[in-house]
Length: 239
Ligand SMILES: Nc1ncnc2c1ncn2[C@@H]1O[C@H](COP(=O)(O)OP(=O)(O)OP(=O)(O)O)[C@@H](O)[C@H]1O
Image (cartoon, rainbow, N blue to C red):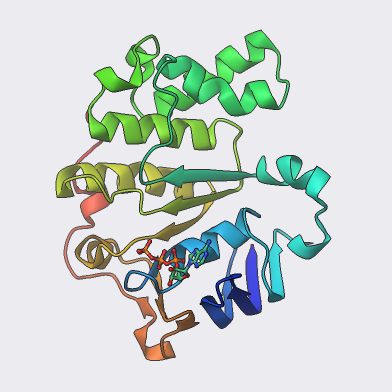
């Protein structure tokens, strides 16, 4: 689903965020990117979302070489990718429904079909009953779930999330991961940047560790479930 080949990203300042990064993520995987602050995690996600372009190297997403996606086609390209951010990036003067509907409105989806899709997405994150509320009346975890509903409302094959649990306590973080796992179970590929190692260690997903814009040695890539109950399935989703 994602091939990153020898990617360098150097900013005008001369700062190199990625220094020859190569990695591959298979369709249907749920993978975490970890690393210290400044390791290049956000830059990697921004290249995949075509918010940035690499200085050199290839970024191939779902068979498309992003260097061949013209500026004009970027909106269409982005529609196949769901994006979740730590700070939610919600419109606070609009109700939950409008926030989730936004990508559909931009894509020109008709009113009735958009309504159906928005409600399906809100249902998936357990917020159907909050569609008329404004984001500021929701808890931080609920706001994050609105952001997730907006990211998946177009049914993307790929979901990328940048520190999606950064502002959440451990319980709410696990709740978000449960939602992600359910998407993964129905075939969505997930790439999640996080430095919450304690949370990641509980989940048993593959981990790609970055350090100063390159991958740490292979031994640091983790594919390991901890013994005992899977915390994501240990408790059923309760609204
Ligand atoms: N637009 C930019 N211009 C100049 N330097 C940048 C820019 N964006 C990122 N950088 C630099 O590139 C490096 C990698 O940044 P990046 O945001 O990818 O790291 P990160 O691993 O996501 O960090 P954090 O966990 O703190 O979000 C940092 O040194 C950062 O200062």
